[in-house]
Length: 229
Length: 285
Image 1 (tube, rainbow over the protein chains, first blue to last red):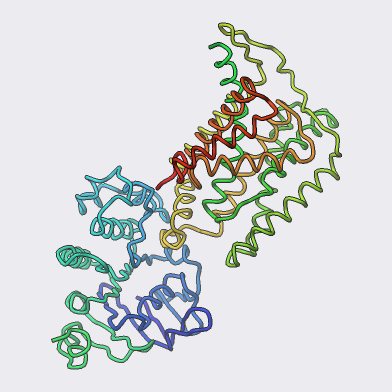
Image 2 (cartoon, each protein chain N blue to C red; image 1 turned 45 degrees about the vertical axis):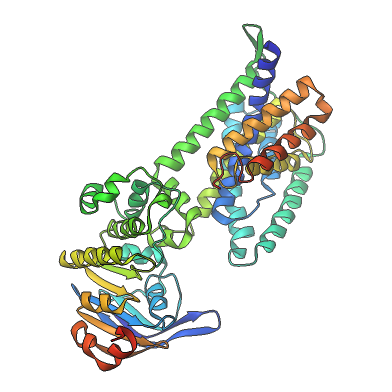
């Protein structure tokens, strides 16, 4: 579904991703793991059109979407739940959710509120007044509102309490169970590898290892450097 | 008591004009983070144009206002595309300088096209209503009603329409707005069109209620920014409350203390408010 070939990207004069190849197949959950600054989030931003690609190609459903405008990529069926949640703080929960459906006609809010009951309780509250965990749920729900074919999660557990992290993992697992194709970047490598069908290990802007989630969970290099036991 | 009410009504009329100017400034500031100083001069261009169409071309006032509003929207779009868009990723000081340059250009153009004479847009609204001892000139009533309708329309647009919500989203978080599928290249054009139309409406009100002359627009934009700061930067309700407060304060000061010192008193009140509420009346702390 998503094919990335020899992608290079970066900020200003600094290149941070040095030619990576990556695939996400329909219905799969793929995780990108690796240290801070390894180029995982930059890769996601490039896919979503927030960061220009220097060279290489990104194909979605066989179509070349490299360096398309961000809103056109959303219309193509890719959505991202961004790092740090980035809800619209001054707008209500409902307004945030409706914006999630901006790229398509109509917005079926009910099934989303059924899936996230806490958001129903908070429906008319400003998003900025929610707790971190609630904001994460809102960001996930908002991303789903566009009814994407590929849903990207960038660091969904960042800055959340362990109990909430488990809830977020549970939510992503249930989205996966709905048949959603998922691309996930996560510092919490164990959580990522448990959720993922396949995973890529990033090191200094390159992919150094690739395998199934289970394989990488027991791979000595991954265990030593990222799982810490 | 009647005298106080009378001044308050007068203040609401001029306050309505301030609100329209401030609303235009606040949505531009919210989206692009720029202080659009040329806004007052562009607004006066709308007033001049209305005068020209009515007096020189003999068009009916309503038609002249409609043409001025549409011309204003086009002008707003051009200003965004040609003056501000190229500086999107540049240092903010650059847009600041462009805004100042643009002010001089538009003031110069107004002078060139419409001359240095003071003009008043002629209207037929010359009746004066007497309501329980309060005198309410028909024209002032139209200005208050016109401002109220535009403020309501603007609020409904921003809160209830998809495009309005997109504007708010871009103002709150541009990158997240892109991820919603919002075309963030389009939004500033819409914002400038609306902002300039509101400004032109204010220009027509100033031109019919008072008079337009070189420098009036620059004075008005300063008031507009004062309202923004008083109400809370980037806040739409803040611009409404701030504009009315400034207008009423000025009118009361002119009526009871001295019309020569009305601006001084209005700014003293503004400074006093900001000492107590540095974030502005409706701003978030």
